[in-house]
Amino acid sequence: MDIMLPGPDGAPDRYRLSEKVVQPVSAARFSRIAYAAAHVVADPLAADPWSRPAIDWERTMAFRHHLWRLGFRVAEAMDTAQRGMGFDWHNAKELIRRSLAEARTVEGADLALGAGTDQLAPAAAHSLEDVIAAYEEQFGFIEGQGGRAIMMASRALARVARGAEDYHRVYDRIIGQATGKVILHWLGEMFDPALKGYWGTDDFDTALETVVGIIERHATKVEGIKISLLDADKEVALRARLPENVVMFTGDDFNYPELIAGDGQRHSHALLGIFDAIAPVANAALARLAEGDRAGYDALMAPTVPLSRKIFEAPTEYYKAGIVFLAWLNGHQDHFNMVGGMQSARSILHYAEVFRLADQAGLLSDPDLAISRMRSLCAVSGL
Image (cartoon, rainbow, N blue to C red; front, top):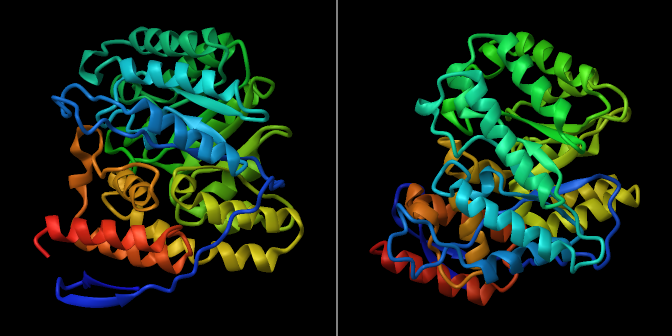
């Protein structure tokens, strides 16, 4: 079980696999709400993968079934699915429609769906009404299909808003007219540089007041908020301010184990892109946590953190490449091609380290297959 991989300096390095494979728990019960933000599988035979993204719908839906079998809810059509990075609203509508239909065939399956403004190019947004109309279109489609919406951050709103009052106006309008409860999403600029200054400021404390004010006015309409700032202290600060019955969903792919476990008084639930990649281990860990076995939970989760930090390293927006890479290594798809060719966003040195860390976390479900596929990637890279 050895493989030659490039080391950090590019020199050949023989790596021996641990052969540790963590087995998920069948019919696991969780004490936390756990959404996995899921990726999409590109169609490798697409004639024009950059400008006309094509999706392998069969494999994409099969991966949702994989997550549901492991006890996760699916956060659909989010940034993990490359929304705003090659995957457009036209395809997102089809993804939403298909995922809702598939969920209805699975007992207990649950999902929430990303509603943004990505059909509106930021440069084409000239007013708050343009942004509101774009949100309304996406909310209308999702709710018309019988789905629940996650209100994603908007590049167009970040471009046209002039201060906190503009965010209040847009969020009040959209949340107020939603037919069901809404999950909000606070996405940091490390995930999307176009969102710099979201909520009308670069100051966290000022932004926090804006967000809390919106949530307090709509406490009966907001299911929860996902915060993705890669800063545990900021999440804890927001968590402490949430009204009763409004849920904190961690989106912190650096610090998720301790945020989910909590501090004895408060804890976060989860809506995480990394759960796409670490689902079998996260399943086993969350099952331990539900049984009150904190030590067992920590022992399983701890090795996933170096892996997640590697996948989400700067430039963080390219994390999707590592997510799809692991899906390929584990046989969930037959190729390592992504919408828009995003697999090229990371180097072979990056993928080699992700391979090592996935093995150490017990996440290579079929080591022989993973070795074979990693060798092929190295060969294509001239190694």
